[in-house]
Length: 378
Figure 1 (cartoon, rainbow, N blue to C red):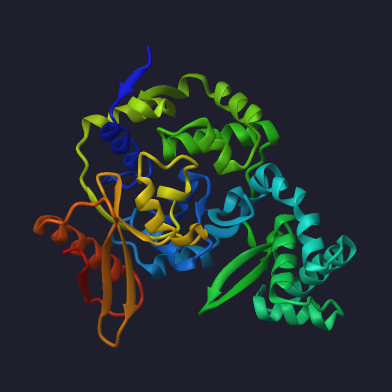
Figure 2: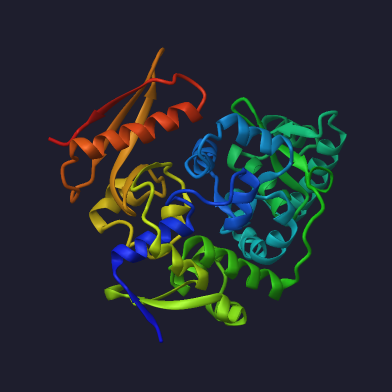
């Protein structure tokens, strides 16, 4: 028998799966990354706050330390997009979902005026240079200089970055800890801890397990979009999980899948109904179909011009109701809350909860602890 849920119940379950509903067992960045499988991290500040909003009391420096301690790393496991992953999972992720991105590399090289021979020579050059670094790390600028010294002079920074991506996608490099505002690269074989070993079939099954436990209820299209894998092997992977997963029906949103034991979360009230989330977070980016989380007008506010740049969001009980921006001043953060077109005016109680969440964010990030909030709703 298929359980029928209301949209309110479905959002409740998603918040729980996404580790946003309240207390849970994952209290380190590595544990959170392992739970998800991969977490959006193309914007480093957003990536860090994705951990901070899920682990009360953790600081930005704790996330930095997890990177330095080689517990989590950033790389391109799927969709050609940077994610934070458990450092023990890099090899099997790249070998399974990462190959799809490599399949499109030739077209990208053609656009950038590169050929495969040059790209492969760049990989060897970068690998040897990073291996020879006393710290085991080179910044992006240093990597570009190394390429130029070897006679590989990309016409643009986009070309240089493509070569770094290519070396990372092949499993030779990973993104290392930040040095201030500088991105670094490390030799994967030297930097990463012992890797978990999964074959192609095992990898997709494990990804299905992690996706639906961390995003469910979600659709098969969500899973296929998240992994960028064909629908047929995605369906086969879900079938292999058997009773680990269950199917529910959500009013007009059709059938969706989640971990079977997740349904029990409906018996536990949401501890946190109001959230201030980073722009690039699994909350929205983890789904191909976002209607449960944000209506079309809201999505236009979140992604102005549909340019792929997600703004930070205010979420109430699983619904996106506003976007927020911040500017750092000498002694405080100036934060502006802009409700979306269809959002109702915020009550005094809701504003107090938003302020509380923003204060937690300010305590997490480097910089002032004080926040001055302006609301644009009238």
